[in-house]
Length: 466
Image (cartoon, rainbow, N blue to C red; front, side):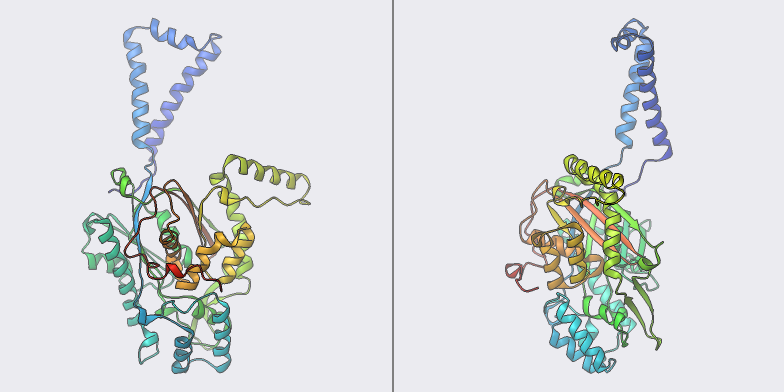
């Protein structure tokens, strides 16, 4: 399995030569004042060597075109990490931990309790191990242990399901919200699975929740792991930094991708489009989620009050670029007409929001929090039935950062909603501020995976209270 590579300069030159050859023949025919049958007569009257040369050029051009065109990128399978049940983070467990840690004022504890109750998270999300240890301090060793547990569990399950030997892996991409130890997490994976010496490794860190989709956009096949909470736990009293303590939970996913077409029959989905937009040039977008020290020198990630507005504004910019790539012609024409009308009227009439449900049967929306999901629903004018998987994933697993869309995908599969030929849109936001989209085509119906993280609870969802 070789990684996906774009067309090289030589391949583009070959394709250009073939195009120029056919264009020259067409131009000659048109300028000669004769009908298109002139070309056939010319080849018939020409010596055999000329005809053979033309035929050879045609065959050679076709060969170069088909041999150098990009190969479809396939998702073979994925696996989501599910911690043991004794690690469930209920409201009672959270409040007991806060009291034992002696790190927060009474006002901060009350503030976090209010955020938790309005967050949309249920009582079955998972907390890191240090929550349940005698020492409540989030030490470095806990962060490494959390990374090992999540990555190795998800990757083991993935390799078992796909029956792919680790020695066949050519590219490893590890994503983590902000945890970046040395040696890197990708080196940790290489060492544990004894991967081959020429394996290409990449580490994505500090890119927020969108890094999961960015990693798929980056490579044709990956082993990927997600957010680390242990060293991102905030132990101060700055309210903008306390919010992350209430939303983020333990989660991890591994995905295996390839461009080997012999594996298409066993692949789950084909990647049809990907789009990343970066809005960091705008100061408010850049600082919407920002890691910094508070007045007492304690490090945390501050989520500003402007975050939801930033997400909505930049999602508008993002879908303007995405729409022409994915919308059906009828919906696209309707959207373009509204844009032209708005321009002519000087902004008196606003462009319509395209109906993306005409382009996709399923949407995996960023589960950053209740407010984020509601904002995406407002911007895209989505019904509750469309945002259901995002709301239920937030309720069951919380915000698992870069792995969150795969818990949503698992929800669709556990419900048996994915059918062959269906189209799926994955949407995620990241710090900086980034918006990332992946469009997929499903290659088979929903399987009944034994390790689906929803398997033991899907019958209880969707819940009525959210």
